Image (cartoon, rainbow, N blue to C red):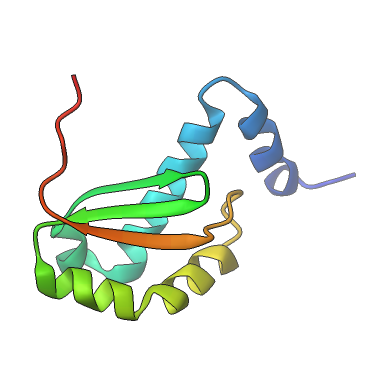
Length: 99
């Protein structure tokens, strides 16, 4: 018998909107991983098909995230959040408002 924590990501992925929920968990873990102050500078954090897309208006933060991308990906995947992060893409600018 499997533990609930082991099968929950698989079950959630199959549900409508479940992938979005797992993406939100990855985004939340990313914000916790980088710390409160840098996380405030991230306007948008989303997971799209294994790519974590971070939008920030801070060029310095964007540069640092790009330098640390391998470490960030390794640590996020080590948390076993149900989704694997394969790449980190950092954009400089403001997030686009959704309508």
